[in-house]
Image (cartoon, rainbow, N blue to C red; front, side, top):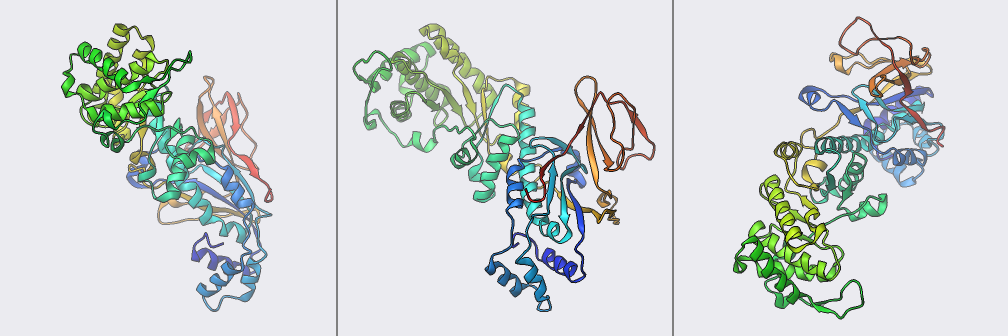
Length: 472
């Protein structure tokens, strides 16, 4: 109950006093106004399971909550209202929704909620709060996925920039719904089963100064049960070969960086990944990485990649890939040319487009701030509108034409063309005959024309699914 706004409680009290025990039908839909409409044309609905679980278990029985409401609502509020709140639940509420991850368009309902007028009024703020940010992040993630293409791996890494711990957890979850492959958020991995990935911090690399700090220093070969090897010495021998091949002065290669890589490789020989831009990528980070990775290869292990976090990511990825190909051919290590290259560095949708246009050798992209904060459109603008009371349509008419609601309980149909692509979403009243595949369908475009158009769908799909019926 407390997860709502004061005006909702007062409206419900007024409805109760007026004997408004009506059955109502509400819908949640996305609306855009102003410049942002040109930017976002569709929205990806968020994962719906937790919404329905929260609704079905919703009951305002906590005595302290009722007491608090009594202290903040007007003193003229009838005692019967608070008695009513002690008994109200969601046992008569039904919710239908588009399936998770679906694309829906502006003014097409995402959710449809049916139930007693007072109860569904109380649910408004909670449902909108849960739907708005989740769908916004899922939509933003889908835009990143479309821009990156199907072959790039995407990792969400925005926890430190998110709107608080709850926002960070939601962002991780709904980025995954929107098409990301991994998250750096360990708690999101535990709670939602999202694959977790991470790399190395610059602070770890810069905390080392020399190989003398490496402890332990030995690493046992993966196969054959051989004796432990002095790994720093093995790396030093490989570094000389790498520097000679790449024509890099040995004295320019950072000893501290090498010590960090060696220490990390001894700790995680199956998961060694080098963060190569702490000092100089091509004159230090990459030579050090190659030396450690080739030493691991001699002992039967494989490095899993490198990460870049600064500079011209596209150009550097191409240069790094060429180094890997050179080492692969020269040292006869076939897998080395395919070492994955990951990048980060305040990646936005626009910079992702630039990477694609320039051409690159990037395998994985980490996105943080521009994913979880959605700077191009910080809010989604879903609204919760009454469309039917006791079977009678309800209409909101305002001075702003875009805020005028479409009355009546509706069914939404997705019409597919012969090529298997969605052609349009058709809203019809529940009592109207449904469209049929292969037959002409007459339609009117919302807010665009008064003339009817016609389309012949190859297939027809009802967009919404019933997920909660009478609280179950």
